Image 1 (cartoon, rainbow, N blue to C red):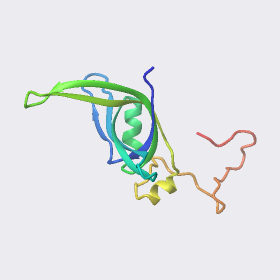
Image 2: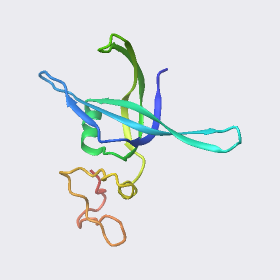
Image 3: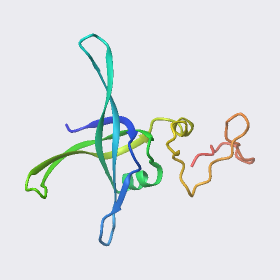
Length: 149
């Protein structure tokens, strides 16, 4: 089984391209910085990061284009895909990327903006009005239906 689950932060804004043809498909590429803990010989925990290339196609690519920004902390599920190509010097280069099947936010928008990541609210969707207690105002006339989209 080829299954990957990662939690990390985007190192930069995703790079978005669209395939050519009658039905163009969004292709988003981004790099996740994923924490790695290890112990030194003296017993102290050290922390480092792995920088893992991710690629998202279709709806997942459109989601990345619309919501993901540098510093956003997300969880990614997908699979590892390997490949190779010959560079300009004639040397064979091997690649490994995570093909994203799903990604979701790990932090709230407020926590994300505290990290200077720019937030993830869509540009063209107004945010719900909030009451002073932090809860959304429920419009009058709704008896049993919850106000979720």
